[in-house]
Image (cartoon, rainbow, N blue to C red; front, top):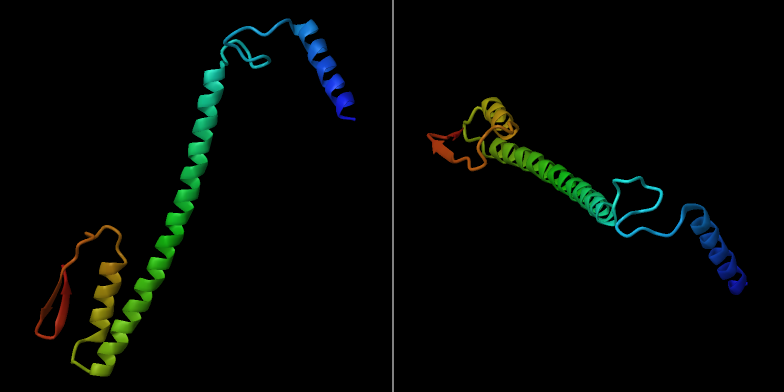
Length: 123
């Protein structure tokens, strides 16, 4: 059976060569005059890199989603702790500051927290 497949493959190659002629160095048959083996290899590498980039991007987006959930949980935890402590801080104002400051992607990554007379100010 394998010998039969090998013979049919060889005959197909011979038939192709008899119609199109022998291989020409530096060209890829049936891809036109511009396509070269180097170009095909480069295109393959580019598609591999694009696939790796897409995978990495999806992984990072998942990490961002997880971190956003953690930030939301920490916000609610801080709010709950402040409510239990009853420190006199206006919780609505604090929630508004936390929501506008932490939820805004345009803010600096290195925010400092300043505690002034029982109020929290985020710079």
